[in-house]
Each structure stands twice: as structure tokens, then as C-alpha cells.
Length: 341
Image (tube, rainbow, N blue to C red; front, side, top):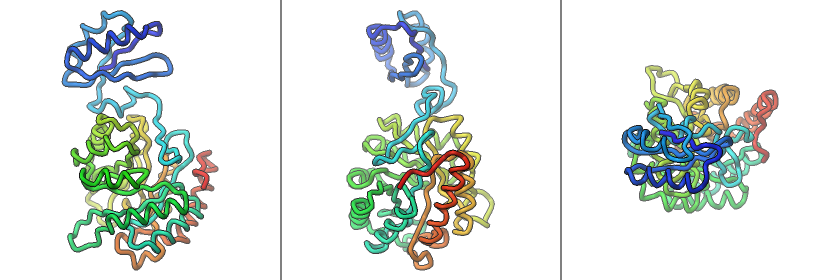
């Protein structure tokens, strides 16, 4: 439920409403707006206190919120959110942001070579996995703490903020000490203990869509993060599982404009995981830009054929540079330029 305060409501009247909400066992959240202040009410069946609050001084109206997700929805927060990641802004009205780098950090030399190349090509963030969830227990699963050290070194040299995945609540503090943005991967999109932990981490979150998540389930996962104190969430569409086997996943680009209508959170697209084929990354990346995405997440490797993880979908350094040229040209036509390097 949203309690709308009148333009003339005093601070004492606002505090009085908040007190009444708390006394009835609900959680009030102040929502300053351009026109007026609103107070969101969280809890089970908050509509039952409507009659108790509408008569309070300063209250204009109390209206129900129709969606099960509250804080990430447009009903609560009509204005778009722009998330700052180490000085790079992601969201509506901000420059188009591109995070690029290897699926997994394999060595210091591999990461530094990639970081220098994607920086030179115009990427605004560096992505790379120090911890990697793998379907097979025998696959390379990252360098762990050493990978984090290499990511920190690459950031120090290039100035690119770092995006890397966290896999368990116990790793959140360790990864947050290095990363500028914590990634919650598709396999953990409904790991609610992890979502709650990153909600308290104090770092922006990149939340990938679960492999079989509906839009509502995805937004409810974001609600878990935001409800635990972290409003800086960027959603990432990375393809969903369907009956199709020609591509790794099915990229749901319709999610981009749909999310924009339902939520104020930024949304980026990962065409690498979505397609699984490097020759499909460029067209899907440009389609994501045209669809209104706020940025891209692209896998890049100096020698994809020798990559220890996701080589077939990784671009070479030259291919990424070419993609960024295309992004700049299309962005100029759409008046959505890439983040300055």
C-alpha cells in the first residue's frame, strides 16, 4: 500500500503516519517524489490498515499496490534509478555502459591483456569471474582469491570498475572487498540467502535472470535484495531455457521494454551467454541497444579457442573492438552514446 501525503503535510504529520504504521506491525518506507511524499507500507495484507491512516492529518489517500514486488516496481518508484558503479552510471539517461572481459580469470597475464584491450576499445567496466559455478564438478571453476587479486590489479592499471560473481553468502564480504559490483548469476537468482546477503553488502548488484525465471520471479528476486537495504540493483537479461537447442539459450529481448514499464531498475543484456556463439554476439548486442537496454555484458578472451570457460561464445580482442565501433555508430544514431573511456 502507498500512503500519499498532501503537498502541505508537515514533518510532524509525516512522522505521525509513520508511527501509526509501525504500531500496527508494518514497515513504513518514505518515498520522496517530485510532486509529493509517499509512504510505502510493507507487510502481510497492509490494506487492512487503510481506514486507520486515511483519516490522519496530512494524508491525501491510501492506494493499494497491485504487483507482488513493491520497492522495485514503478508504482512505488516512478522515476528511473541510475546506479553508480565506481563512477560509471548505469540506467535511463546515462551513457550506454559496456562491461567486458573473460568468463573466468585464468591467469594474471590473460586478465591484464584483456583488461587493457577492452579499455582501449571503449569498455566502461571489466568483468571476470574469480569464482565460477560450473555444471560439471570437473570443469575449471576459477582461481578464487588469486583471481580477485588479479582483478584488483587490473582495475588499478586501467581504471575500469570490476564486476565479478559471488556464489555464496560466506563469500560476500571477501568479494565485496575487491569488486565494485557483485554479480548474482543465473543459478543463484533464487538463492534467497545469497540475495539477502548481497542486500547488506553495500555494493551495487548485477542480478542475472534465472534460467527459467518468469519476469515476476526475476523482479521478486530483485525485491529480496532491495528489501534488505540495497537499492542499487541492475537487472541482466541473459537468455532463458526453452525447447530450442540451436543456441545456448533463448534471448528474450522483449524483457527489456517490459522491464522498463514494470520497474525503475536499469537493465542490461548479456548476448554471450544468451546465444553461446560468438558470431551471434554482435547482432544481438546491437539489437539490445536498439531495444532500449542500458548496457551490455560481453565475454572477451585473448584466445577464445584455448579458454578454460565459455570459449565458443567469447569474442577475440579484435572482434570486441569492432563491436564497440558498431555500438558507437548505432548509439549515435539513437542518441545513446557509450560511456567515455
